[in-house]
Length: 406
Image (tube, rainbow, N blue to C red; front, side):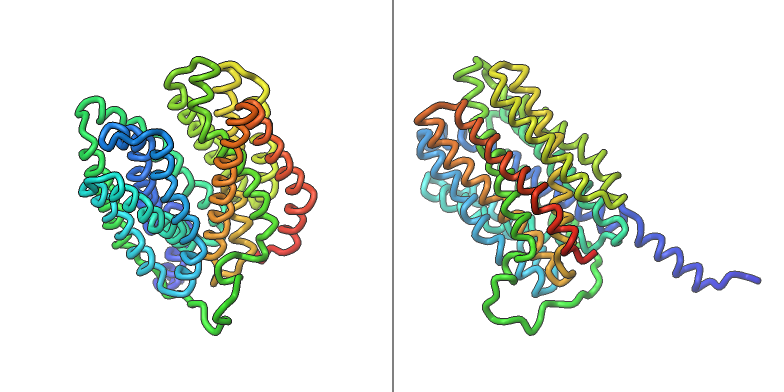
């Protein structure tokens, strides 16, 4: 008997749907790479630009550059709501378009005040487009490949964050032309926008008939315990990421060592995501999270305890390994606690928790460093991380296994 052509076509379509690197996922992966490449191309060099162009001192540089963090945090809850309540492709393209256009704002900002306004405004579309893009990435993945796909999706962030600063420094050393970097960021984001414009997404159910005012529309309430522990983990990272460069220079006589620190961190992240994605595909979500939080805890202890280059650089790789396991597992937990109509809210919730933790780490770490020294700040980072790890094993893991929807 000859096989029915329509049955063969249907089977082939189903097999294609199960593919991890389907065309939509590949497009959204590349577009996410473009987001972080264009953003990280400028981030490490903006302090130098503000100092050389506008004569801004360290305190003023901190004020100017902190604005985008605040607006990114404020927009996250609303981003999840809009992504769940309106057609996702339209929301994604609007956010991506505004994000890209604001790179042009840096080119025309002729004063420190105008630059501060543009930078602060830029945080909103950055916060929104990262939520929208990651939510669409989850939509285009087959359920059987979703956890694995989340892990690989994060590689686009990590790779972009690893190579963009080095590329920017290389271009600046050759040309000594900051506006050229702004143009490259603008062009890179335009490519990402064009790629996302070609996405072919299926129609999906929109959130309807919900109360006008509901906290669950802006934060996934079932993920409150995951959110609190994520704040602890982000707090620790916020302390290290902010003060690692000045600590290395002032106390370890490592000049310019932060570039290698973050490179090793990125290598650890990339390696652990490649390994962890395979176990996520097998459904070992809490196991991945457990390995990640424990390895990260060890990394923060190494950094706080060993005041030498071995501890400095070794901790970077260890923390990268831990966070690379922890982050996709936690994101999968948030997604699995939410109905499909709240994927945007779930994505924004984990990012809100991360932003809050980073902000607290920067603030508290600065106070501790100023009054009693860097070493105490890093031990505080380790202690807060320990609180998060303890809570994960005592409550969060069991809460997830009891309340997951899939």
